[in-house]
Image (cartoon, rainbow, N blue to C red; front, side, top):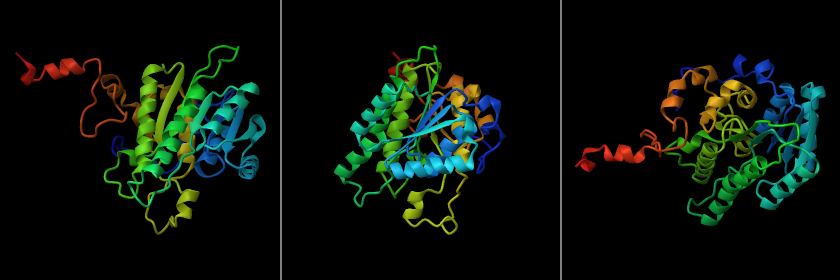
Length: 313
């Protein structure tokens, strides 16, 4: 997966810049979960720079949300963007339902949803099923619950508007072995795979759905667990790289071909789009599946099986 394209980026670049007119988020409302710090806050910032009409930051505490908005106001020209906050706990299904009820009552229609909030805790015992159940609920089931409310919004009277659903996933989902954790990559794989199935049922013109690995971004959680950005030797990339990728993925028409895909935000998107033949020839291209094997088109699976000599009469 790391050599799919020739160029891997560590810093943002011109094609995905939020200042480009073809990446504009104007007239759109964007909701980012887990937006009080780190990547989530950086994603919100990129949509402000892309001149989104309304950016909604969600998190678990009012104080941290207030600080996040203040930071955006001091680091960007947010004069064209309404900034608002709402408290939601991604661990709680009731909290998610209540959030969408509040948005509906307020007449807020979300055009772009970025699923960033997640749990990355590592249990002491890989077979701790109770802990695993909580991780699956947070990183998979509640993410889908959030997505379902987003997809089922009542379309505003002004007419059709394509939605975009972007899920922050993880490259660990296709890394073997990955001895440090099992629940996190497994839950991320489940979400990306399920969203790919949802994309099979929902046309891109209705909602563009993309899962992506943000690269290695230094986070509060890493620092909390003692990661030293210098001594660790990890290939960190700038946080605005995946953040600006989100803006490009949501707003640029060229990103339509990635509908249903799982990609790395560090991949050069121009080189990625040049692989058009792969998209057209292989419906499973860049979708979660069995490593080392070509994807199987369900519409032709039996004809391929019966083509083997063991099945020939």
